[in-house]
Length: 116
Image (cartoon, rainbow, N blue to C red; front, side, top):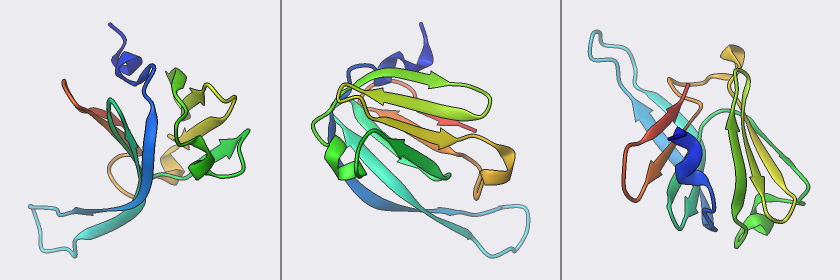
C-alpha cells in the first residue's frame, strides 16, 4: 500500500497557521520555533513547514471544499493535486528546510507520514 493513499480523496475543511517547537535534548541550545500551515482534511491534517507553491487557484482558502485527487512525493517536492485543478507543491530540497521535516500528515487513523 502506498503511504500517500491516506491522502487520496481527502476533502480540505480548513486552513490555519501552525507553530511547532523542536528541542534538542543533547545540549542547551535555544528551542527551534517553526511557523507553518495546518491544512485540516476530513481524513486528517497536513502540516507544511517548508516553502510551498500554489498553482491553479488564487489562494489556499479557495481550495476549501476541494478533494485531493493525486499525491506524489519525489526527491524535490511533495505534490498534491485537487479536483478543482489546483496544485500545492511543498519543497523537499535540502536548502529549504527550516526544521527537521518539510511536512507531516496525521491521519485520523493510522501512522503519521513525515516528509523529510
